[in-house]
Length: 254
Image 1 (cartoon, rainbow, N blue to C red):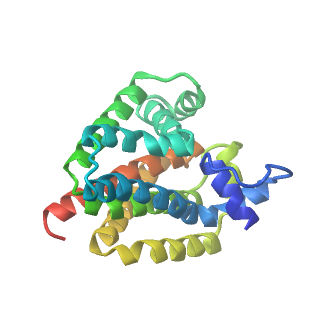
Image 2 (cartoon, rainbow, N blue to C red):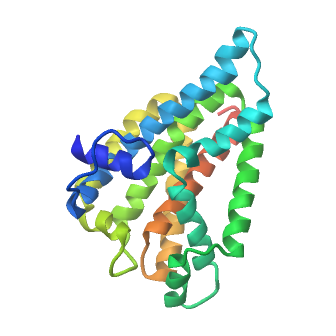
């Protein structure tokens, strides 16, 4: 359980055990538990949706939908400390800067936020806000549960299947110890939590996998590999794709 708790406390704001004597190997071994961390987050998100959008209205208490939607947008960054959002924004700044490889990596390491990052993040939030307003509440429960599970699995694929672009970095701790066993355990965990939610969840998994492979290959050609920031971008974009798949999938009766 040590590796699971390390992953949980690194990827989220949920603190259970004391952060003491953690090694690079400990971080690497936690990768296989990323989808399980996603399931913990998914359970929290799904419970929130059920309580405020189904349980309370059934008992005559209606909370304004637009307010709840706004809160549902900020809830994931709150619980994860904005870790993945930061990676997404850095990736947008660097990869789409039009510069040479070394300059891209330098931009991604810079703590300052550029115009690409701001535009991309604002656009993503606007699209997700619209998706959530248009999505049926009961469909949303499943979407919010599998969303972080699938996104975490996509990160595992990026870590395990693609080279690391830098000679050093926090993300390298994960990449150095990830192997086929890591990928297999994470995949089994993901299927256990995703498949029971039915065809929309299966479709969301397939769409996210296709996107991750395309995006990871694209970034690898640009940077010579992936970085910790790119892992965060994969997570953030996969979460958005899961919501989009559930919205259009339910609209077409899947």
